[in-house]
Length: 67
Figure (tube, one colour):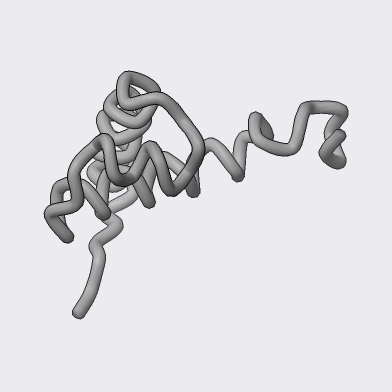
């Protein structure tokens, strides 16, 4: 369990970080959703949803992946 009584993989900070990772890996680095899903041990559909969530988080917080 995480510090707030949630499972580690579902804590708000973990969800945001995973979402940003999925978005940047897919959209900015060109990795496939299948490849990212395998590396993170999540389904391709979960990876796609996470990427969309990451795009929203990046836009709302003006976050960018730098070189």
